[in-house]
Image: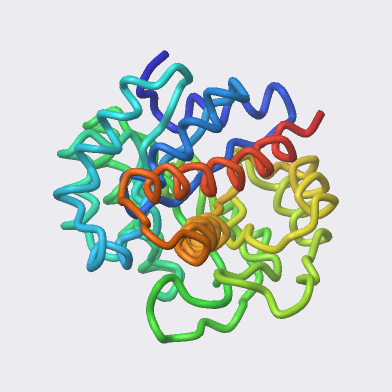
Length: 278
């Protein structure tokens, strides 16, 4: 198959009323686990990494591995910069061959969010890449210590934002949050429906870890075409490593690596089954 623009996968998902899984990765085992599951399920996927994670997983190391793995995969794969915080990082990802980028300017005033997002859209188009942006504020945090208070996306502002920026995909805030939810989140499906009826582009759901199967399926039926999974995959890798190391008197790296791949693959497989919306 091939390394493809994310927009291609989202439009394909729209036709099939499903969502594409976007799985955050931080090392080789996570990349291998995501692609193993995708190939076994014969489903396209999005490999992504957030700028906040680059302190522990440098882009200079991760990007070539992600792009190369996508090119060699037996399924279509997009490679995406998630929650880019600087235009410099976005450009670096594009130079490495990422087929999709996101500059998260959602904490800026509305007009500034439009202006900076539009500049990134123009930059990405020159590379033939897809652009995602966020409107409203998704709760939790994306790798830092600051907790963001949820601010649900305004459907009318969403329409103006998409028309003014030309983004290919819009991440919305409907009560979702990054990280682990202490209880099942109360998602505002009424707001999602209004956005879906107003905005003519694929919608993205961040903070997928911990949502119920029914919530995922309902969101897909209301226009969500990309669902981000990060915390669940990092936790799956850590648990797999812990189980192996606890139960083995003389652990070795190669077995440890394989167990981490299996842990991530199992988590990805479970989500891909839900996102297929069959």
